Length: 101
Ligand code: SF4
Ligand code: SF4
Image (cartoon, rainbow, N blue to C red; front, top):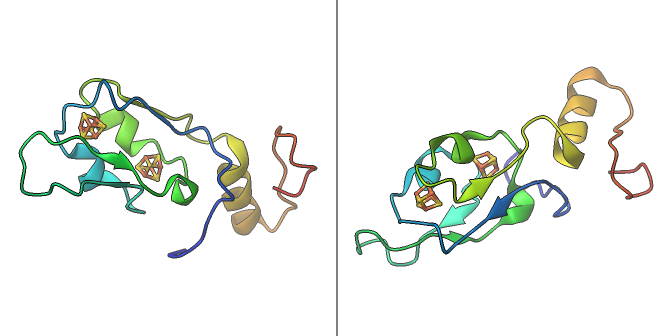
């Protein structure tokens, strides 16, 4: 799934003001959605760099110590697409994207 974009339609939200730069989201995210350009600076905030790559697994939100990240795992277009791949059923979610996700 490397290189796959989820069309930018997902439930991921990031509050940069809350971020304390711990780096946990960088460690746990399987798709490198967050990045930090100041890698050598302890406590430097991260950037939501590739939001369309988010597959809504929820790992970042669970591990963020200051609740700077919110995401609803298992809902939205990304989840619908993954479910479709696994089951072979047509992708379907509750968004207004015309049923094509
Ligand atoms: S929900 Fe998962 S894929 Fe999305 S940004 Fe967080 S860790 Fe990465
Ligand atoms: S886990 Fe939270 S506090 Fe830590 S770098 Fe990521 S967004 Fe910032």
